[in-house]
Image 1 (spheres, helix red, strand yellow):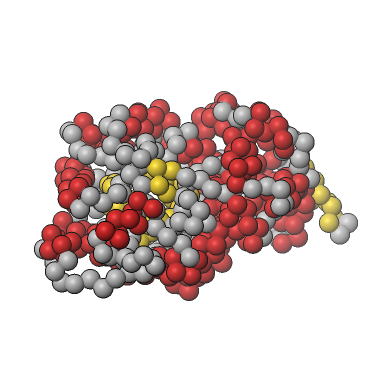
Image 2 (cartoon, rainbow, N blue to C red):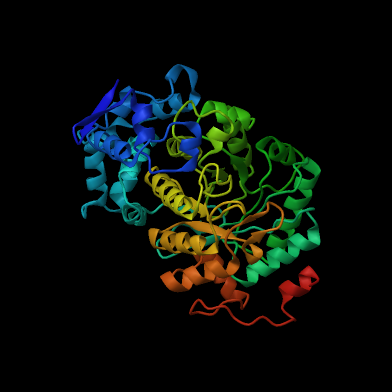
Length: 459
């Protein structure tokens, strides 16, 4: 179906829903690279005007990628909850924006609405939002998940302790873990990106982290971010796997390029949950996403990168994940050119994920060839803190020495907790108090050279 809008006596034509969504998207380099971006600001405004008047029911009748050729489209439409959708069935995209921003909508209302929203509806409404709108709507949401601690409660804010090492050296990894724990980092997960995806390496890293966790009775979870097939082999070998990790995308084709499909994700989900290692819950999946992944795999089908990104969230919510992390600036300036585009994308991803019921974290990051710097990351960090982000990354010095990109440090998380009056996950906070790493006011305590964490790590 074609769409049109007249601006200043000129009528803009949009051939289908896919084109309308792409042209309405705030400017970003990835859509320009794909040739789907609006050619002018006026064309973008015209597309946004046409999108604002579009009935939400359109998204149930017109797919941006055909149902017959894409399992993500089938997943989205086959799992749509008509009863949850009923309260907003008569609205347009523009009216949905007004509804989400209205005083009558609170966290329970949004929770009830989640199954009735499709990714394309959510992507569409976000394209009509200013940054403050994205923050306001996100802050209303509360998405809580549990494994060994409780993540996502209001007034709480967690971090992934990311102790990567370029050679997977155990002593280097242990030093980073201890460093992060001293700064109160790691309540979302202690998660390592392995330098190699070998089963033997993964098993050894999983074992090492689990020994640390058990020795000090740390109420958190560990994860080695290997490919799902590697982690499944590690489980078969008896490795103490807490979380199953996988990168995912929003089209069947991009997931095929990752070597996965929903059936394989289901296998990983069931194998990990069968281990029953959680103590306060059984959310066992950890997913990572990022705008531009479908385009970089030439698997976007002409769909704009933000809509592709939000479609990935349909895959994630099928498996009730503990954590979903958009690695927002990691792919590079070909997809998000500068700090302004990275900030916008981070706020979009967080808001859209939360509206779909996901426990969203953001890796607030950039590559060294992007037109961005740490000041831009400070801005996004602060905005996400006010928006209620579930977690961010904690990396020594904010510089990942294995993946070679810039992210957020242990100090950045402390800044946000102090500024926004946020605390760690409750179970993890109680552990920090017991270990005399934090006082009752939420402030870090001086650590003596005789502290048992240091002695145990041989540091």
